[in-house]
Length: 143
Image (cartoon, rainbow, N blue to C red; front, side, top):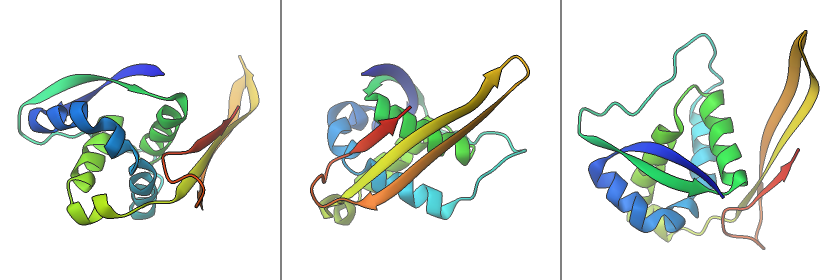
């Protein structure tokens, strides 16, 4: 498990602390939605969850696969992991969404083609697939 922190509005921070595992069961569906709704962004600044309400820093733990998937999506669409977590919580709060069973698996892969003092070339991918046998957050990391 990797320990990190996210910044959330206080009311959502309390909910995240209590319901993180349940919320994370819907993470792949929400990450997939974010990729569908946004395009790859470059030449723009990162978007944060500035909501005009008091926020708090929450120490949280992710598996390395969860962490890699969250950071892949966040970096691709130039948003923060905190904002992705906030969106996951908001989506989870919708009862209709919570009742749905998502059967998704995702495979994260990174290939380092070149990494030295002259430059770096790497390729990252996150592929989603229907997976009836594993309804929870499932990622197969390859490095």
